Amino acid sequence: MMLTTLSAAAANAGQPPAWMSFLPLVAMGFIFWFLILRPQMRQQKEHRAKIAGLKKNDMVVTAGGLVGKVLKIDDHYVELELGPNVKVKAVRSTIGDVVPPVGATPAND
Image (tube, rainbow, N blue to C red):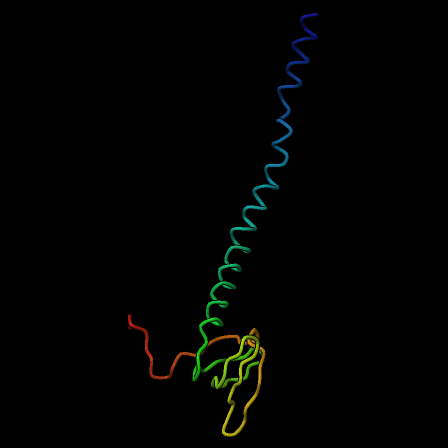
């Protein structure tokens, strides 16, 4: 009788708890969030701040690769001057980046 009780206790002691099987999935989810989602959210936040800070005479690059100077800004649209007498109306969310002025150098150089 005692031998069967000891063998049953030994068999149960060898198995890990059930929650331990989910631990690798939780760890992979955390790593995925930390390495992929978090930097992407930060990048989107910076892009939204750039778009919100647009002003007249800024040089911008559109998502299609066009470089132009901002003439007018609306809630949804931006009027760009691509060249002499070439004006284009673009959707504000398609602005990819704001180009810094040519003469501007970083303060730490």
